[in-house]
Length: 335
Image (cartoon, rainbow, N blue to C red; front, side):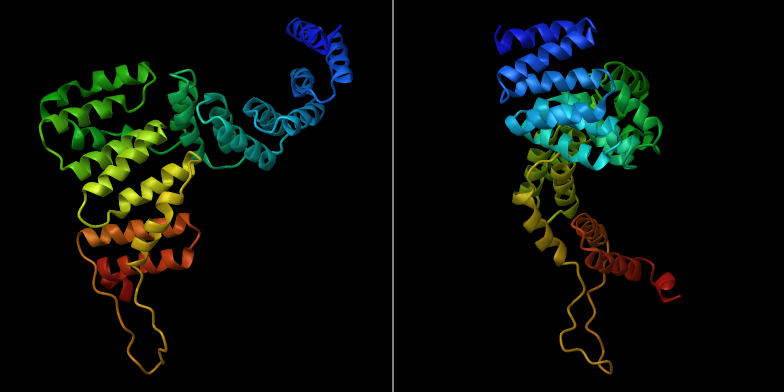
């Protein structure tokens, strides 16, 4: 018999839960073709189904080493690590699987479970569940709704979003439409519909319209149109919009998209809200102070701070937040 024949026999035995026979067949396939990644993966699935996670990891590692560009092997390896309580290794393997195939919902769902159950990052988990739900066309809707039940009310699922952005003539119908949207497992489709109607009425400037569509797609778990709309929002705006830039970066980081086109421009614009550098300052001299913030510049400074937070530049983030505190709450700051 050929290695392929032994492998197919192993699969049949595995499906029938005849584990000893399956293991013998997979081992025969590996003995004939030790460099055949698929046979190693089959052996790993066998061990995984028997909850022999360390043995499964060994086999999955062999498969992934032989075919490094196969996302399925990395996904299986991630599951092995997750079930054997090795969250750091599982995180790396899930992310590698996603980078190799961004359109498969299962790794996103597994990564979401890992964030929730092992890494203590529920917000990251929600983002992954959104992506899995979107790609799986509702197959993973249960996880995203369960996740939301454990978190504070989310703004785009709230009364405020409906109140602020829904056309007035449709206001009485929002409960029924929102319920239908949840039943259809299409989060925020209703919100997109409301924005659509708002745009038809000409009620939003192009920059604001594209920013809201970017946010809607981001929260739906669809990064490509989110990035496109954020980019168009910035192109239509006179001057920077650090909120759009921040969510542009967040879309890249949450969904493992390249951030190179967006990071440097965002950091450069955010730096404009840092206080003046005190080069050569002496303690008896009066420090040069930044111009007071007001109106829209307060929001810009806030998102500048968030951009620095996400880029692990906490000292710069604090400088932005201190500017807001000093200008927005001067009495409290002085106290």
